[in-house]
Image (cartoon, rainbow, N blue to C red; front, side, top):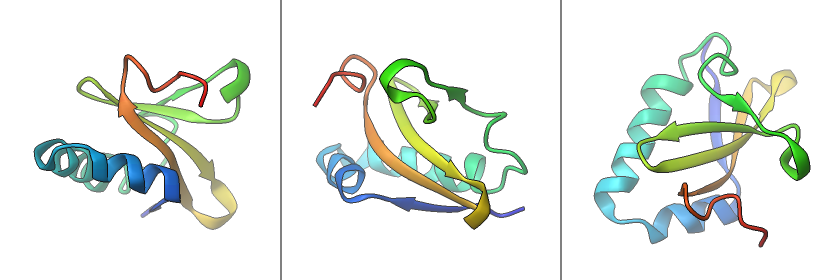
Length: 90
């Protein structure tokens, strides 16, 4: 099953702030590892607390926070950032 990966405005802005090499690495990982998964939950980890219902994916020192929408076969990327500050309240 092919999952569609979309970015909300905040995630798109966070991605653009990263250096080109990191951007390419994250986008390649999304295309090759996540979009082609039968079940994207196998690759990620469900989050708890105030981020309950969201999923986390690790790409090196960076984290991708997303929402999985089964009814639309869609993975909506909500946040992208370094692991040291991705979970900060903003």
